[in-house]
Image (cartoon, rainbow over all chains, first blue to last red; front, side, top):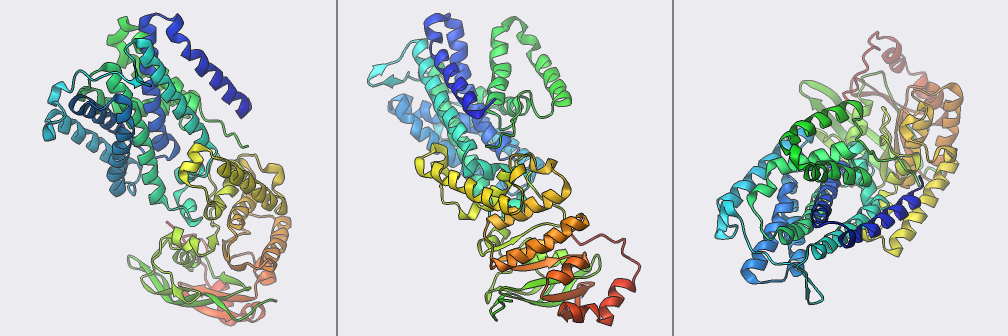
Length: 308
Length: 267
């Protein structure tokens, strides 16, 4: 399929999705609303993991930083939700950059271990209520809903629309990334760092940039997550969440937008729909991951090498 | 020959040790603007190590690398590349899973102006630049007769073509000095004859070339000046004719039986 056709198809699907609140039941609206948030986080994980090729298994941290920044600013300082988003993005991106700076020179598996450690530190910080702002193990309650042009959004449908607008924006950004020098440089670094550096690529700069970009986007999703649930707690941003994000990218298809979206559906939507099977959730996922990796190591919906 | 006397690259007494192994020792080498300089020697002589030192992949243990009179040893590879020094690799290093065109676009990295956020937002000037980059790269591909395969996955192409893609990638960067590590390795006679012509064309376009090569057909036909090293030390240098008749060189090549040793101290 031609790239432009794919883009139009994607746009049509996105517009069709906006009609979901009109026709679907409340539980479906809620599921797809949260899907949009997790899809953004998964796409942001993919920037670091699938595109720049760094084994980031602590990506839930940046999602959490964004959610907590919004929660604290909204509950304690009464700042409107959407105004907290740029701050959440900047703070998450800075956390990503500061954390990445000393570790990006580490090779694959070593970097992975460092990111796991970082995720654990983040969890401990949240639980122990460092600075007295995170609310400890209980988290933060009564987070407000966004207001758009002075109009307060309280309905499930309203949240849905805001979340899907963010997803739409992030999809456009990812699509642009593919066609820019930045996107290519990430791939060069992933495929052959030595060759890339001898052509003038400053590997350290671009790797830190990948972390900053991925973290910033996850932070934006964190803002909407806090508002959607109206509460945040440490459990949503633990190591297991990072593992799930990692699996979404690997199982879905690295650096493939449809692949990552499909992975998000499999990991977040399917379990919601089959609630009765919740107990078997990780059993089924575990098996599915093994089967996919053995039979289709490039992911279910891999990136097409799509030279233009 | 348009050789004027400006020295581009100078290796001043460089040496490097890996553990107890002295891979390069007290080596002096000079490359003048417009020259094609050949670096030859038996397997394991340290030729690739010299290239890795020049391009910043290795840091020399002693000595200095001078580019237009300024020290560049110790700079990271991307800083060396910024000075206009581009290289190919003995074992071809193309970007896996990417098309020929995308591989060659990598050479344009330093000549591209778009910022990262311009790329994300896909602003008009960024799109114009992308279009222009592609056109420029297609020109280079055409010159190297690679335009037919521009959209093929580079690493799935025959070996000889991959070598040309790697060359195209460095040419895309408009280098001042081109460093070729065994450009004829794995090529058949036709291809290596073609390579001779390509190298001379590149030289005529004003690019200075330093190459390592085993194929004497290439070395003797394209170089102006040859430096011979053995066990990390320079044993001879001069014009192709003088080197060919030098008894030390003949002994280094024919007098030893350890040609199996493919180790070039290359990590």
